[in-house]
Length: 114
Image 1: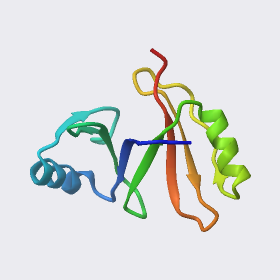
Image 2: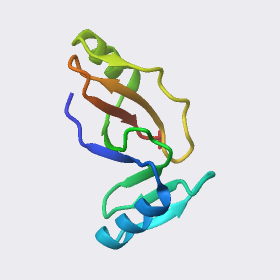
Image 3: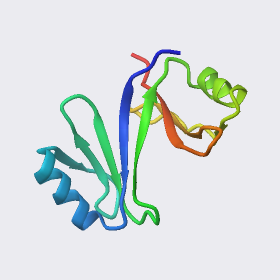
Protein backbone atom coordinates (compact mmCIF):
# COMPACT_ATOMS: atom_id res chain seq x y z
CA UNK A 1 0.00 0.00 0.00
CA UNK A 2 1.70 3.19 -1.16
CA UNK A 3 0.51 6.28 0.64
CA UNK A 4 1.13 9.95 1.29
CA UNK A 5 0.35 12.16 4.25
CA UNK A 6 -3.15 13.56 3.69
CA UNK A 7 -3.99 15.25 6.99
CA UNK A 8 -2.46 16.34 10.30
CA UNK A 9 -4.28 16.71 13.62
CA UNK A 10 -2.84 18.89 16.37
CA UNK A 11 -4.11 18.03 19.84
CA UNK A 12 -3.44 20.72 22.43
CA UNK A 13 -4.39 21.46 26.01
CA UNK A 14 -5.04 25.14 25.18
CA UNK A 15 -6.24 26.22 21.73
CA UNK A 16 -5.88 29.87 22.75
CA UNK A 17 -2.11 29.57 22.88
CA UNK A 18 -1.52 26.95 20.17
CA UNK A 19 -3.60 28.63 17.46
CA UNK A 20 -1.65 31.93 17.30
CA UNK A 21 1.64 30.05 17.75
CA UNK A 22 1.15 27.97 14.58
CA UNK A 23 -0.45 30.86 12.67
CA UNK A 24 2.53 33.12 13.32
CA UNK A 25 5.28 30.51 13.16
CA UNK A 26 4.18 28.77 9.97
CA UNK A 27 1.96 31.39 8.31
CA UNK A 28 -1.01 29.01 8.15
CA UNK A 29 -4.53 30.46 7.79
CA UNK A 30 -6.96 29.21 10.46
CA UNK A 31 -10.58 28.27 9.69
CA UNK A 32 -12.85 28.04 12.74
CA UNK A 33 -15.22 25.10 12.87
CA UNK A 34 -17.39 23.69 15.62
CA UNK A 35 -17.18 24.81 19.21
CA UNK A 36 -14.48 25.88 21.63
CA UNK A 37 -12.29 27.57 19.01
CA UNK A 38 -11.57 24.34 17.17
CA UNK A 39 -11.02 24.23 13.44
CA UNK A 40 -8.26 23.67 10.92
CA UNK A 41 -5.26 25.35 9.36
CA UNK A 42 -4.70 25.38 5.62
CA UNK A 43 -1.08 24.47 4.94
CA UNK A 44 0.38 24.80 1.45
CA UNK A 45 -0.68 21.25 0.60
CA UNK A 46 -3.04 19.77 3.24
CA UNK A 47 -5.27 20.67 6.18
CA UNK A 48 -4.08 20.49 9.78
CA UNK A 49 -6.88 20.16 12.32
CA UNK A 50 -6.68 21.76 15.77
CA UNK A 51 -8.59 20.50 18.81
CA UNK A 52 -8.27 21.35 22.49
CA UNK A 53 -8.59 19.67 25.87
CA UNK A 54 -6.14 16.96 24.85
CA UNK A 55 -4.51 15.52 27.99
CA UNK A 56 -1.55 14.35 25.86
CA UNK A 57 -0.75 17.13 23.38
CA UNK A 58 0.45 15.61 20.14
CA UNK A 59 0.69 15.82 16.39
CA UNK A 60 -1.09 12.93 14.68
CA UNK A 61 -0.33 12.03 11.05
CA UNK A 62 -3.03 10.62 8.75
CA UNK A 63 -2.03 8.61 5.68
CA UNK A 64 -4.17 8.64 2.55
CA UNK A 65 -5.66 5.29 1.49
CA UNK A 66 -7.89 4.42 -1.45
CA UNK A 67 -9.98 1.89 0.52
CA UNK A 68 -10.26 2.52 4.26
CA UNK A 69 -11.90 -0.83 5.03
CA UNK A 70 -9.11 -2.76 3.28
CA UNK A 71 -6.38 -0.65 4.91
CA UNK A 72 -7.84 -1.21 8.39
CA UNK A 73 -7.94 -4.96 7.71
CA UNK A 74 -4.27 -4.81 6.71
CA UNK A 75 -3.35 -2.95 9.92
CA UNK A 76 -4.99 -5.72 11.94
CA UNK A 77 -3.42 -8.51 9.84
CA UNK A 78 0.02 -7.00 10.51
CA UNK A 79 -0.56 -7.04 14.28
CA UNK A 80 -1.73 -3.45 14.72
CA UNK A 81 -4.96 -2.12 16.22
CA UNK A 82 -7.65 0.11 14.75
CA UNK A 83 -10.61 1.94 16.26
CA UNK A 84 -14.00 2.12 14.56
CA UNK A 85 -13.89 4.06 11.30
CA UNK A 86 -15.67 7.40 11.20
CA UNK A 87 -18.78 8.13 9.20
CA UNK A 88 -18.23 10.01 5.94
CA UNK A 89 -17.68 13.73 6.63
CA UNK A 90 -18.69 15.95 3.66
CA UNK A 91 -15.66 17.52 2.05
CA UNK A 92 -13.24 15.46 4.17
CA UNK A 93 -14.02 11.76 3.77
CA UNK A 94 -13.58 8.98 6.35
CA UNK A 95 -10.81 8.22 8.82
CA UNK A 96 -9.69 5.67 11.37
CA UNK A 97 -7.30 6.00 14.32
CA UNK A 98 -4.76 3.17 14.47
CA UNK A 99 -1.75 1.90 16.41
CA UNK A 100 1.17 -0.20 15.25
CA UNK A 101 2.16 -3.34 17.25
CA UNK A 102 4.23 -1.14 19.62
CA UNK A 103 1.42 1.36 20.22
CA UNK A 104 2.55 4.17 17.88
CA UNK A 105 -0.54 6.22 17.00
CA UNK A 106 -1.37 7.22 13.41
CA UNK A 107 -4.47 7.63 11.27
CA UNK A 108 -5.74 6.39 7.93
CA UNK A 109 -7.74 8.78 5.76
CA UNK A 110 -9.93 8.00 2.74
CA UNK A 111 -10.66 11.18 0.82
CA UNK A 112 -14.23 11.84 -0.32
CA UNK A 113 -15.37 10.20 -3.52
CA UNK A 114 -15.32 12.64 -6.45
